[in-house]
Amino acid sequence: MPLSTEDSAENVGLIPDHLAYTIEGSKFWNDQSEAFKSAYAGCKHYRFITGWNCIDVISMFAPSFAIADSQV
Figure 1: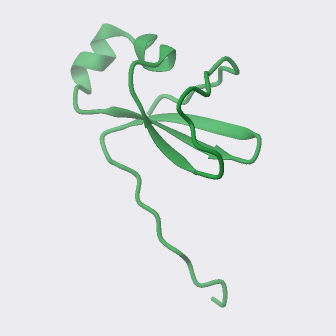
Figure 2: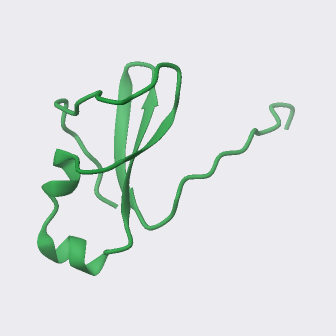
């Protein structure tokens, strides 16, 4: 699961006040080696944005979210 550490990710197509996105054709994805992309052909690039920070993740599994009970 490569994680992006670049600050140059473009914000094209992002919607304010949203958390998770599927990203296609990004520099982050294109910079991965051909061996990686071949070995993990079913992977997708996801971007998660929280406040002023973002994390880019390549994963075979789509993200899922649930509301946790804060009373635990």
